[in-house]
Image 1 (cartoon, rainbow, N blue to C red):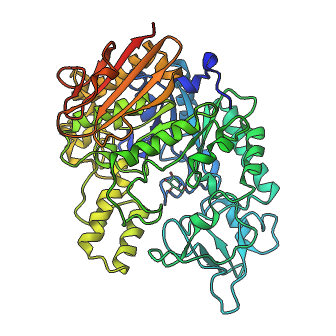
Image 2 (cartoon, helix red, strand yellow; image 1 turned 120 degrees about the vertical axis):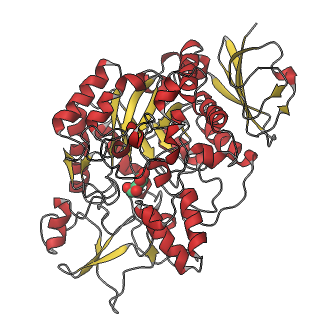
Image 3 (tube, rainbow, N blue to C red; image 1 turned 90 degrees about the vertical axis):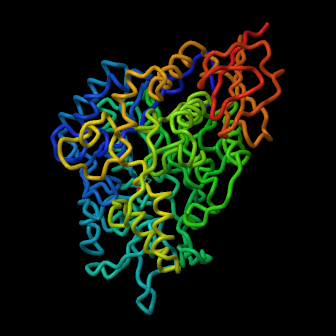
Amino acid sequence: MRINKKNLKWWQKTIVYEAYPSSFQDTDGDGIGNLKGITMHLDYLKSFGVGAIWLTPVYASPMKDNGYDISDYYAINPTYGSMEDMEELIAEAKKRGIRIVMDMVFNHTSDKNAWFTESASSRDNAKADWYIWRDAKEDGSAPNNWGGIFGGSVWTWCETRQQYYLHTFGDFQPDLNWENPEVRRALYDVANFWLDKGVGGFRLDAVTYIKKPKELADGPVNPFMGYASVHDMTANTEGILDFLHEFRSMAVEGHDIFAVGEANGVSSDELDKWVGEKGVFDMLFEFSHVNVQFDGPQNWCQTRPWKLTDLKKAFFDSQKATENTGWYPIFLENHDQPRSVNHFLPADAENQAAAKALGMLATTLRGTPFIYQGEELGMTNVQRQSIEDYDDVLSINQYEIALNKGFTKEEALACVMEYSRDNARTPMQWDASENAGFSAGRPWLGVNPNFKTVNAALQENDESSVLNWYRSLYRLREEYSLLIDGDFGELFSDSEEIFAYTRENDNQKAIILINFTGKNVSYDAQQVFDAQPALFSGKSCVAGSLEPYQAVCYIKDKG
Ligand code: NOJ
């Protein structure tokens, strides 16, 4: 997409909020959040500028991977409510100018999906070729040496067919065979069903894995996994863009929606093909900034020390790659990542100041901010005492792998604590009452014990809270259009203390400075000398210096 600065689309100007329905708000006391719970809080979301809500999957599902294992794309998970509840959410959101964005999990289904049950029932049924089936090797072993993203082989044996099926993720998530045109048609029908319901966009889950190489040949073994990584073997396989162009023409073009792909494996120098003028998506989640401390996406226990310049490089590269064409989804958190205050700032950082610093980054880089639930409150990671207290299938598998690799229980748990997806999945902290006001019943996942001091009710009435900071950031974006349409420029690229950049349009220039350290730092005040602080966190704003974790946005008119 070529950018027309004068005529940006609605989704380029708004803020998207990711809601994780199980943990957002429970209204019926079963301990699991539901759709009515999201409808209930629409005005809250509107108060800091949310114009679209990305719902992680709400379809019928056995919930072995929290909905990313879909058994029926046309039905709502009864735990979340009914189709009427969904229609009500779409309608109530629309009244407030908010659109609902659906998560399209099209790389795989649940093994309980009727498509898979039929496919697995024989070698010659109508859907026999809808999934990826292969014969065993002569000795009965799996067709190749690939290991999956949740650990273990990507192959699981099916007694009925006397064949193996391939799964990039868990064995309960068989991969669909995109080479089969009937499969693709069925998926486009799903997308169109939801378009007819009036949704405002799609997030395409794990989309870089949908195309597999022709030969499913053995690959080099990743020593940590003990397998060839399925990510290395299949992500972004040649030919994938043909499928995605077809998806775009069948389910996106002609609709006033956006499509954002989850694109592990697409580097910033390839962004042009994915989101450029002839690209397949409007935006693409790429992960170099959240993986800044990993050697590879599957070496989760092997972290390396990282510097602020590494993080800045990751962001700056994608800002540059989408400079003239394409558009960037800015995110620091999602349901798979640790909380950003723990991820990007030192453990002893003062929480409120840290959350504000990151809020400035998330809303003033060039692109559409994607805020994950609770980020607007500065919610933090959670520490569990034992692996039994974790729900996340990935964490449980990773713990086992670490033990098998010779890690002690304490070491394995320490890794899980830091990176578990449960960190982001604890219930929303609405108030200081029992269960943080999330549910009248026992929450499906324990509430973070800090809810008495970090919660929405408390922050609502505190002018200096993180929540009210997000409201100020929203107003700032509304008031100064250059924060939406302005070009991006690097500032102080070599600094290990300050994350700084400029935004600039025909009329104005913004200078954004964020102190990533817990000490006072100084910088060359010439950069900002005739500019006015439009918004700053901390006690006072003095050109040339920043308080610990202070974030400042200066704006000057161009002469
Ligand atoms: C990416 C999703 O964000 C994650 O939560 C899920 O487990 C995998 N894809 C598999 O669908």
